[in-house]
Length: 203
Image (cartoon, rainbow, N blue to C red; front, side):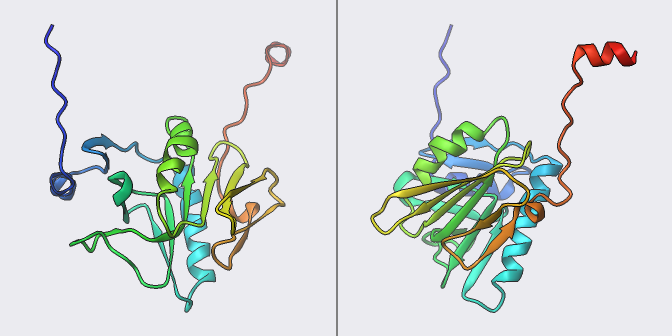
């Protein structure tokens, strides 16, 4: 059996392919990986957060972007599309580009079953190579659960967890707060199946 040779792309080849593609892909160190499509809950959460951020930070020196904006991390040779990004001050672009930024202070990802391990461990490690990044937020779409990582003055990361709809996420990188009730507005969690004994009783 012949082993298929792995093809490696330059960033320029990736960008050319991405411009013509009908779906988004991530680029990492020469390889291209198609990105999974989002669910309604995924989109609702990302939209709730980005809309609230955009309103709270209006007329202030911040830009809020959703997943259509590409992020370039030169040290990791990674092009990707975070769910929500916030940039403080002037935008800095990838060299020769106007469609990929390099300087977010905050990134939020909505977790899915297929990507949550990567988002928590692998992607967070890659994101920490961004010199401007001060905050990383992970949001579950299957239950009320938010994980917040905030960089401290001594270059350590402080972890906070929120699991009540009455809790308030207080971001540390920008002047912004949002209740989890608002963050999860219109999100429809799947109900757990009834135990067999209850199903039999109601049959």
